[in-house]
Length: 386
Image 1 (cartoon, helix red, strand yellow):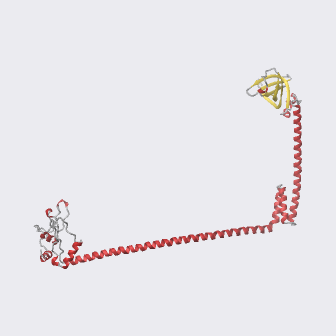
Image 2: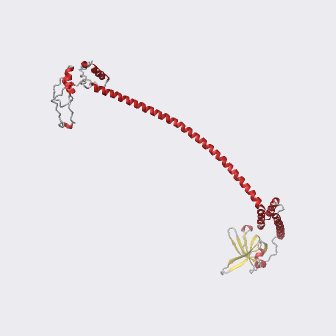
Image 3: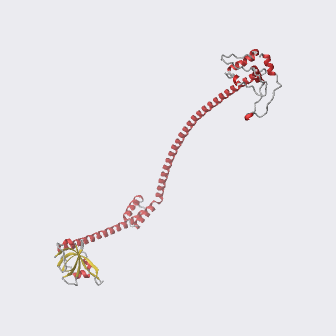
């Protein structure tokens, strides 16, 4: 096919082109009508079909072994350039070294070369815009990063400076606080001195009076000594001296009373020691009678006694024994005797005549068989003669 025929076939509009708007079988979407270029390509391969309502499709037996080259590939771009420069050679089919016949290279129709060039230029410009856009974004990002780093470093330096300034202010504040405390102490000291000058003598005299009224005579003497040192010769000093003299007199009286009390205690202790010594010398021969124990038992509590009589009743328990003793065998003079069974070598039986030695413990009361309360003198026995 030459260039003239190709151009004519492209520019001519076939009159028998029909659009098949019927719904295809098997619910397939409608296929758009084929272009004149497809029709021409089909005729160049000797296709017998003249129905242009459907796109041209090669039978499976005539499918090329290699894919039709992409118009956007490097080789196709070169062919398009050659077609634009030399239209007479644009229709030549590229050689194929393969065994199967190669598909014819699609020919670019006339009148569309400029549009393709425009599209190519537009793509190049678009790619360059994208590149420039990426470059600008990269530069902006880098500048932002550098700015952030520099701002971060500047922020760190600012924080460090602020910390140093805060520390300096704290130190100054501490110094000012210490100076203020010193001033407060100095002011308090001066206030005390002023108060001492104005009210010192009266306040000191007041303290002396309070101590004297409380009976703290030693404190009165101490306070007077301080007042006399500070305000010697003043009216308050003379009044405080009178109070101090009275305190000395009271102290002397108290000392005399204490001395007399101590002497009385000493005499009582000596008397008690003498009495005990006499009792020890006499032993249990104190001469205390049953009549004395029965009449005034409290006067002879814990004093040693000695009695002889008849055992009227004897009761033994685990660690104690009890004897009702008729003094001098007189049943009207009953004595309640308690002792430890271990002090006798043998048991004491009723009607035994024994002598008991012990200390008076006052009166002992018990209930008789007739439900009467009986009280008799009692003795804690230390030893028994059988």
